[in-house]
Length: 327
Image (tube, rainbow, N blue to C red; front, side, top):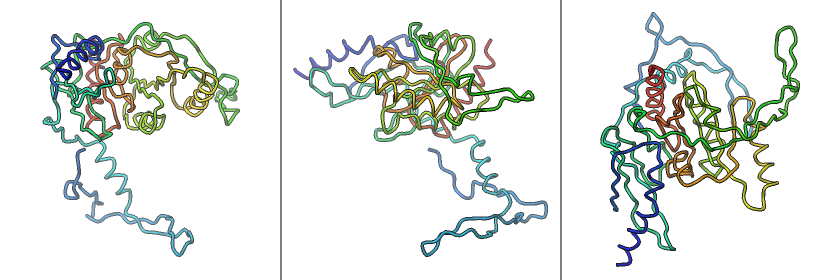
């Protein structure tokens, strides 16, 4: 009897939150309850004579507790060629690992932890990557780009502070922009509406919460490096200041911004988000960095949480290219 009461209470409390996901759905139902490459799949590149092109290269060798530089033999750019082939090749898409639901982590209500997760059904058109408990790999991403009618839009009342390098850190000499300071001077632009800031262009938004070990800045930069696209990419930190620790939190934000702004567009949300807004950004798992593909109207057309995989990178690239072809 107590279990039935807890389940009904969970459904009543969570239903409004689940409604605000990156995906619209006609009905809502609750149920309780990496590709690998073998050596024979890699084609070794050879010269016109059929032999590998041999060259020499200085390499580091460690022996007997000492380090020395020696001339070693390598075979052209074989490793780079293989790496490029692997990255550019189409990965095997395991469609059996996609489901028509997103599994929501177990929740605690009134001190009682549900012993089973909830499976949220969104639609029967586009399946989502199943989450495997205990793994860090990307999950919850759709197999295809979501139609706008099934997508949710960014909230219009989310304000961010954007950080950039101050103009005084540069000078123009002979038509060239020269950096004057090794440590960038931060320029802050507070109280920007995130939706207005990104409106009018297709953007890949990388979101992290700062939570260790998988949702810190390195997790966001891992996604940034994995995205092999010529596109607008923006890094967003969702980290409200703890009560009574605003001074130290501000120093933490400034140190992060100092490390990121030279090569990245970086903003920070400083207020606490609602449950619906948090779900939209983090897809139920705030402990991972996440990536959102936004169209020019601010609709979330593709979403993933967790560390990038070849499959996730490929599907994101496919979704972005389809988005570019939309009117």
